[in-house]
Amino acid sequence: MKTGKNRSIKKGLLISVAILTISTAAAGVMYYLELIRYHSGIIQPFEHEIRYEIAKFNAAEEFTFEQSTGTRIIVPANSLIDSAGNPVKGDVELRFREFHDVESIFLSGIPMQFGEERSQYFSSAGMFEVRAFHGEQELALKEGADLKVDLANFLDTIEGDYKLFELEDDEAWGEGRNFDVVSNSIRDSLLNELSKMPPAPKNPVPDSNEFVFEIVADEKKMPHLKAWKAVKWELLGCVGDLTADQAMRVDWDRVKITKVNKRNYKIAVGTDLVRKNGDLLSYETILEARPLLKGKALKEAVAQFEEDEKKYAVTLAKMEEETKRVKQQAALLNRFTVSGFGIYNCDRIDETLIYATISVEFDFEDEINPLINEVMLYMLLEDQNGVLSYKSHEWDKLPYLSSRVTLAAVLPDGNVAVFSADKYDSLLDYNSGKRHFKLKTVRIPYELFKKEYIPTSTSNPKFV
Picture 1 (cartoon, rainbow, N blue to C red):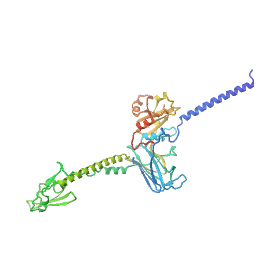
Picture 2 (spheres, rainbow, N blue to C red; picture 1 turned 60 degrees about the vertical axis):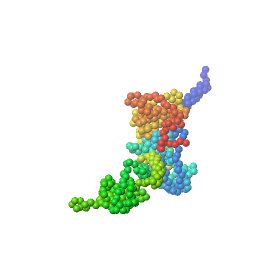
Picture 3 (spheres, one colour; picture 1 turned 90 degrees about the vertical axis):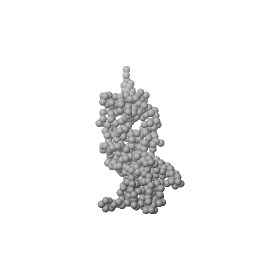
Picture 4 (cartoon, helix red, strand yellow; picture 1 turned 120 degrees about the vertical axis):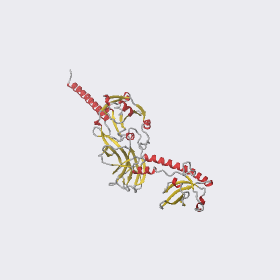
């Protein structure tokens, strides 16, 4: 016979089990929700961060910071304050890094998606981070002070509505505002100057293509030319009524030789002719020429020429190297001002919801649970200069993009599972009607991935 006391104990046990079951289920739901939650702010795919370029300057003076990419930032004099709002004096440090391609954007971990469903994303025309420090204390700009920024823009064309965005508090993007796109006039000016070739050294021994002549004169009529008898001349230029060829066939009445510099002379010739009708015709021509050397003078000149040729080769090599350096600068610059330090991005907003979707599975899912291990899949959009990231619960609804896309999943075992853009282009044929794909990846260790898949260029990051 069941007593009331026994029934109460059993009822209590049932309630306890129910509560425990509900609590366990609730905990499971909370755990699942945490696994699929996207965290805000900067989340780097690897531990290695992109190194800052560092420059020191006096806070009391205006400072212009320049990068090999063409980026320039001007910090006004006496514009820096500490966390308490006090003016900063003395030496301070500017820390800067920029991101101009999909690889560096990916490695930075800076968020490129936003919106309630993360359906909006940035296509970048240049992104950068700039900070100022006094020792290890981070500084700010005082009210009313602005940084003048010319940010390198490596896009061939600017199509669409690009805006300047700030990553406020390093968490979320603020409202966009307009900026100007201008030609890199410094780059253009330098390339123009470098295109002007310096005059090459002149060989004192003329070759068969040189115009060589002698002055043959009646010494009784022109005794001043006796000193130039049998001297061979190399023609450098000719101006006047006759060409050099014509001048060689005329008996000149007047010949005057004037020294121009150490080696060159001006030979002014003239003659008067009377036509049958009695009219007087006068011809005047000036030949620029240099006497050919001989003997000791020629030997010394040849030695000097050979030395000058070596120096000229060095000059040309330096010009070529400088031309390569200048050409690494962006031809276009995004020009704007900012009132604070931080992360800024020149972007066009695109929308993933306009695209059809595909579902993908990866070969590593047989070994690694991507949900529990929080494996993040990155879509590197080469043509759009953007990066999308997805946790595994959304791999069944990835946007199908016409851009060249490299898929990179960062695994917990120290490898990156890569599905290349070439494979993406060839296998994912949306017109075939297929919507589900199982992809075979290439496993690459983190360090090797950064070396092989992140090509070296002026716009790519350096690692510490």
